[in-house]
Every structure is written in C-alpha cells, then in structure tokens.
Amino acid sequence: MDKQQFVDALKLHAANVGAASTLRQWEAPAGRSPGQLALDRSRWFARLSDEDRAMVEVVARDAADAALFGVLCILDGVLRIDPSDEARLELVRIEQGRANLLASSSVDAENLHDLL
Image 1 (cartoon, rainbow, N blue to C red):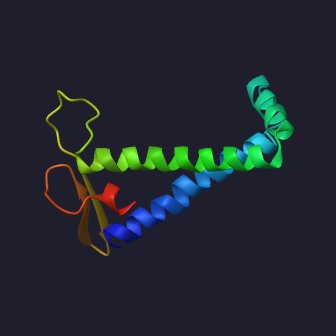
Image 2 (image 1 turned 120 degrees about the horizontal axis):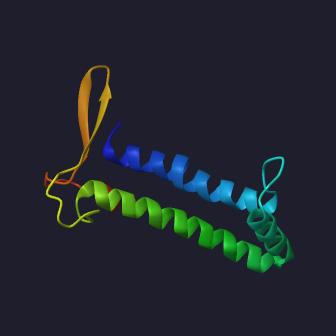
Image 3 (image 1 turned 30 degrees about the horizontal axis):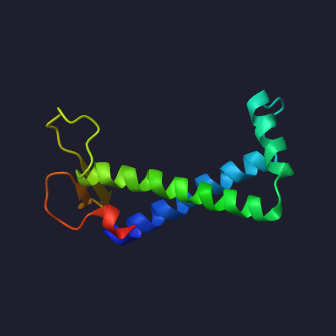
C-alpha cells in the first residue's frame, strides 16, 4: 500500500463512513433507549426540507474530511498537538515483514494531507 492508497482508504473507511453513520443516527437513533439529545437531533433533522437535508449531508461530509485532513497534518508534522513537544511521529505499515514509511513529521517527503 502506498501513501495515496492509504489516504484513499482513510477517506473511504473513516471519513465517508463517519459522515454516513452520523447521518443515519440523525435519521434513526440507534439503541434501545437513545438519549434525549439524539432524539431531539433526529426530530430536527426529520423536519428539514429535502434541500436543507442535502445541505446538512454536505456539511457532515465536509466536517469528516476536515477532521481527517487535520489528523494527516499532525502525522505529517505540519500541525503539532503540543508546540512544546519535540517528539516526532511516524506511521509505518508493515506487510509481510517489510516496513513502508507512510508518514513522518521529520522526513521531508510527500505529505499525506496533500494527497487528500
């Protein structure tokens, strides 16, 4: 798996799934006894016009993408969780005993966040 495949997989399996599951929860809260906030949110969402619902779906996808972008920026080292921390982050995929560096905050290479 190369960097682009990794970013594509995160987009598909994290951002897209996260946005879709959030929207499903708003349509029909899961669980035997959903909390009041979940029920209120569901009632609000149900009262929206089709056009407004479509816009909320766009916002949910944008928010998921923005969160993923932020995480990738942290992995790339262009955004720090703690500015006083000098530690570096590295993301390595090990497949069949071979290591593949996907992200590093200290190596000058193609950044994951640029591939999103």
